Length: 432
Image (cartoon, rainbow, N blue to C red):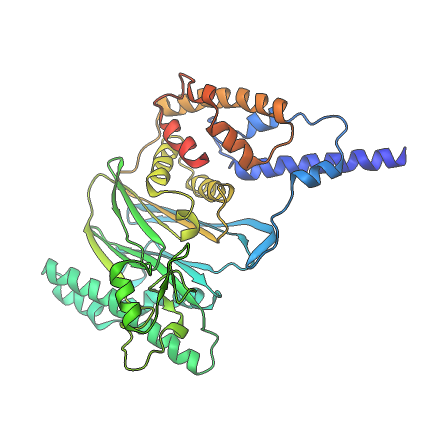
């Protein structure tokens, strides 16, 4: 009897843990709408009476520990938010399956001092360590603000063309200066041997100043379409490849293109092992610290801006992410839940990297729609029934497997409430 009691208690613990796994994926919202499916899962979860730990162990089989991957992923999320200057933002990050959290960020919705009407946001995706990304997150903004070009832009504020040129040149100069400063500190003994990509944006009342270095991306959604997206700096692009080869390197195209078979980005801060070629200046090395800086006018129809590291973009196309955010903004004003659900979706789609996503809401962002909320309620009822059927058929099933089954369910796709709905353009895109 004692053995049976222990087994039963273990079963209840396993059941509770499993239910927490489901809840962790479907973020909890505060309103009556139920896109998260939490209630559907809770009401549908009917484990068999004799449930032993061995079965649960098989179900929760962890990823094999290999290279930089954890055997048990770290799914704790860090979230920050703010609002000012007519903007609001949410930023969520998660270590995920990687052994270390190497992402860092900087968010100033109102820059202190005379630039208080401007905002600055940046995500730094470190590789080989967190030291460079952390250093950049602390010092990039200040380095930009102190450049001669940025300081002189105030003097040329009446000349709009000259003003934007000065700001753009100041951003570029700051990236190069920061990279040089870190190299001097590395030579002096600081642990700055790793590297980091950067995606950053200044937002003024009239312009976006977007700086990209590496393969993190920035996207602007406007009037239900992607208005702008940054270009990745990859070793196999012709311009980058020519510079790499002139510096004595090569690009290995076996699978992911890599410099000398190792590094998968062609521009980054840090990575000084790739910046030691004699008789070449800092812009001619295997890896360049020079960012691409794009200046764009702000439009009244601009909806939102997204900055994210490759842990997001590797598993989720920009158009799919924008469709999802646009839909969710019509259902909830809770930006924290939206950002966390993006992280969860990418995790369950198989992202093995650190994940960071920052969403900035602009004045043209979609508003709450009672019609969409009602659609969402109808969809919840439909999904609840389908989840019940799936659990009855398969029993215990991984969350990611459930998503795959739902996305391929012909009957679900033919439900009248789903055909042509915004939900169809978001949920299915995320779950495939």
